[in-house]
Amino acid sequence: MTSGEQLEHSDQTLDVLDARLLLLLTDEPRLGVLECSRRLGVARGTVQARLDRLVGKGVLTGFPPALDLAAMGYGLTAFAVLEIAQGRRQEVSDGLAAINEVCEVHATTGQGDLFVRMVARSNADLQRVIDEMVDVPGVERLSTSIALSTPVPPRVRPLLERIG
Amino acid sequence: MTSGEQLEHSDQTLDVLDARLLLLLTDEPRLGVLECSRRLGVARGTVQARLDRLVGKGVLTGFPPALDLAAMGYGLTAFAVLEIAQGRRQEVSDGLAAINEVCEVHATTGQGDLFVRMVARSNADLQRVIDEMVDVPGVERLSTSIALSTPVPPRVRPLLERIG
DNA sequence: GAAATTCCTGGTCATTTTGTACAGTGCACC
DNA sequence: GGTGCACTGTACAAAATGACCAGGAATTTC
Image 1 (cartoon, rainbow over the protein chains, first blue to last red):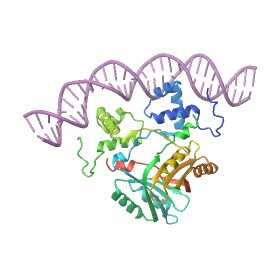
Image 2 (image 1 turned 90 degrees about the vertical axis):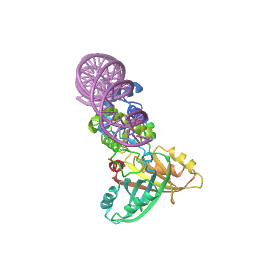
Image 3 (image 1 turned 60 degrees about the horizontal axis):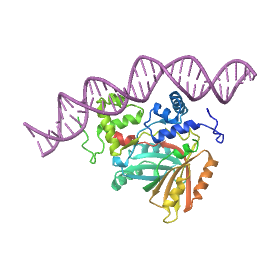
């Protein structure tokens, strides 16, 4: 059954087997190739080949350790939308990247030019981080909101499940 | 050198060695315990004990496969801020969670009540996803912005580096 | 239709890693 | 001085890995 079940998707990057494999690894990331092959009911070489292929395609980029920032003392997550001076995106981005607590920055359409995710140890700490951000040259306006809860934590699963 | 270098941090959840270990695993996630011990210049048992402890503390939650959504065909990432009817957060969250393309939802302070990260295959596809979100009962206002670029991709490194 | 290609299977092999255990050592604390 | 704790270095059996290869089935190509 090389591949014949997925007639509905066009740019079929992922195979049913690929999806099942990734799903399996999503649930139990520490599984070895051998275990995977057993669970999936295929030969070990197949799993090995699939993984290599997925990495080659750039779909699977690695298995980074997942850290719980809250458990590390960074109990606060906050988001900031900032407006910046025209044509200084690069400069501002660099300035933000230099702040340790800044965990993610996106340039977006709409009024806010940059969107930032950051963490802090406490409210006071957050204040400090925000101050640092405001001080970045080129930042004109900054509005922050604190994450109170996370009804849907980062996930990819549904996208995979639709294939497998 | 059990632990004696980190005098500046108070709720010292993480040790210098912990940080170095996590940093190492961040860079090369597929390393085994033995390799780590070699790289760090400590005994294998030590690395093993540290990892167990980190997992026990809840700091290290696993090694999920990192997938490149763009390589999977989801080239578009977008953010949405939505305002919802009073007291229907749970209901709305569930509704959003049922949409495959919704990758993350946070409840936040400020005007926007919920903050959503989503992906799509194309502009048309994004339109569909947005429509689905608007149709979720309890959603009153929704404003979307598309991620044009990501100057700072999700990272934890700086937080670790400050310790190690 | 026949040939070539591709992908999976199921097996082998030597090498490496894991899990687990243990005695020994340096250090902090009482 | 004694106790507890974390790290070291070592050991050994069991398991997994990486690298092969021949054969079969399905797909594509001519």
